[in-house]
Image (cartoon, rainbow, N blue to C red; front, side, top):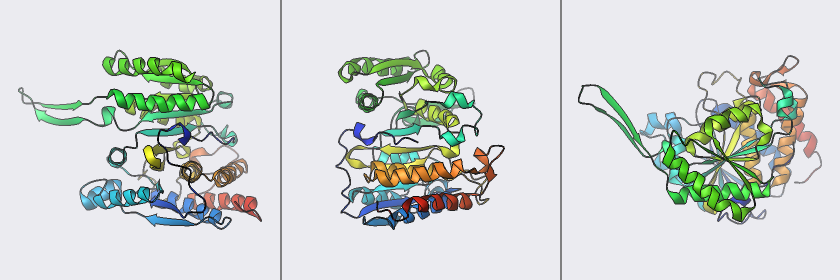
Length: 378
C-alpha cells in the first residue's frame, strides 16, 4: 500500500513536527467492549517498534470512557480523563483511543476543539476478495473523507416535552457558524491541492437548505485561490456514488452527520468496519486517533474482533503526530503481508483464508513486523 500524503500539513496552526530527540508522549485510552482486546494487540506492536529506535517514549494510561465512565462517573467524558488528555496535549503528545460509547467522542471533540476528522479510505489489495463489492470496483480507490467535527446536528439543543394534546414532542435545534464552515473547507481544499486536486462537498439543499447554501457559497468563494476542482453533490447521491464508482473521489468534505454516515459507508471499500480508522485534529497539534467502529459489546471477550483498524490508527499517529513515517510504513507493510499470507479475522475472511482470533492475528502481524525490523534501525 502506498504511503498516504501527510494529512496534518493541510491543517492550520499545526505544531512543528515532533523532535525525535524529545521523549514522545502517547496517551492511551483503552475504552470499552473490544477495546480491551484490540488496544493490547496494538501496543505490543508499538513495543516492537520501540526496540528498533533510539527514540524515547512515554506511554500514559487514562481512565474509563464512554458507557463505562457514564456508569462510574455519571458522564461519558469524566473530568479525570479530560485532564489526562489536556496534560498529554500540553506535553506535545497525542492520544491513541479505543472505542467509547454514549457521547464520549462528541464531548471530547468539543472540549478540545478537534474540529477536523480525516478518514482514509484506501483498500488493501490483499482484501479484494473479502468484501461485498466486486474486486474491480476497488482498483485505484484512494479517498480521504474530511468531516467537520464540532458543529451541526450532533451538537446544539435538544430535549422532550409534553405537548397540548398530551403527547410527547422531541426537539433538536442546531446550527453552523460561517467561520466553522470556512475553516473545515480550507483544510479540505489544502488537502485536495496536495493530492489530486479534486474536492467533493456534500450538501442536502432540499432537506437543510440554509446550511447547504452556506457550505456551497463558502466552497465557491474559497476554491479559486486553491486551484482545486470542486464538485457539489447531494449526500444521498454521494453515498451511492461512493460505493458505485469510488474512483471518482479524491477528497470528500462533509458536515458532521453527513460525514459520519459517509465514512461508515466507505468502510465497505475496505472490506469491513473493523478495517476503518481515523484521526481527529485541532490546532496546535492536538490529535486523537481511533478506529472507525464502535465497542461491539456483542463480541467483546470472544477473541474475534478485528484489530487492524486500531493498528492502522497507531500507524497514523506515528506518521502524523510523531513524524515517524518509517515506523508507520513498517507497521502497514506488516499488516499487508499478514493479510496476503491469508490470515484473517472472520469479518474479512474469504474462502481460502485461515481464520484466526484477535490475539493470533496480532501475533502474525508481529512476526511479519519482526522480519522487517531484523537488523534495522528506524
